[in-house]
Image (cartoon, rainbow, N blue to C red; front, side, top):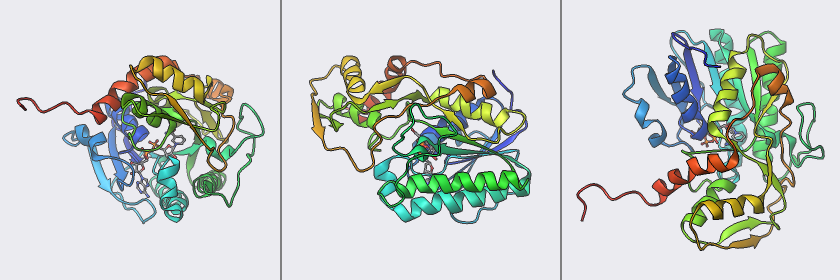
Amino acid sequence: MEMSLFRKTVLVAGGAGFIGSHLCAELLGRGARVICVDSFLTGRRGNIARFLDDPAFRLIENDVAQPLHVDGRLHQIYNLASPASPPQYQADPEHTMLTNVLGTRNLLALARDKSARFVQASTSEVYGDPQMHPQKEDYVGHVNCTGTRACYDEGKRAAESLCFDHLRAGAADVRVARIFNTYGPQMCPDDGRIVSNLICQALQNRPMTIYGDGSQTRSFCYVSDMVEGLIRLMERAAPPETPVNLGNPGEFTVMELANLIRRLVPTTAKPVFRPLPQDDPRKRRPDISLAGQLLEWRPQVALEHGLRQTIPWFESQLFPAAPEGAA
Ligand code: NAD
């Protein structure tokens, strides 16, 4: 499904981040004018450098927890602004909570004022360490509200609550995507996420860190599939009035992921085992039947293929080519 966004103005908060920059590229490719709002907390200028000369692209440097003013018509708002990996969101937990609560409130107010549709990037972390497997949207979760992940998990839960209050009040047309583990080029090599860690360690022939015994499971969605899911959620005629899981239901143990990476990257790296972090979920797999029904969406990219696309990106970040003419 390729919908044209010609003449639509779309605001992407967090557009300089990993998923956000792929989303900006896809929206520009479909003819939209894109306004990227980002504080560059975890996003990188390099991710959006290629858009800066495009007259259809505009950058507003702003912390979404602060009030935001945007001139002119806005048709759609995607809120992806939040640090997403534990080391990044735990670096300043209070700011993470405020980014998700005040940032979402500020952007919802903008959606209301501009009569713009709104898509919120929520997370599978709202399910916490789940007692239901796989996770369906009606599962209310198992989250520790005082743990070291709470600033993010509870911040995202509060943001969902704000979204549905706005929808029920008729203040804005709001849709909520619960995003599961997503990977691909433009991830930050030092973001501490499992895919980045294992690929970078393999490329550098360093020990590959496995937390616990590696039997915990994760599901990995390639970024182009995620972007397509987010756009379909935005373009659906009516808001689904329930969060929608977006992720790849293929389930792999962490050890299987490490072994696959060791097969794809020529490496001498060996696994090294470390204690599991606090509240680390044992199992994680989305039930995506709702996304299938409502959006006719399911991921197309298999893990091995996605990793083959991603490994050269990390290689280019870790071992930048010498400039031409260098001795
Ligand atoms: P990312 O860190 O690469 O991107 C987040 C972007 O938001 C960055 O550009 C960052 O600078 C910006 N940002 C953070 N705080 C901000 C603030 N206060 N004001 C303005 N900009 C701010 O992360 P990502 O992986 O691209 O994730 C994007 C969204 O998707 C996040 O909301 C995240 O919670 C959600 N998500 C991602 C995953 C995943 O696996 N990547 C999984 C679940 C949910």
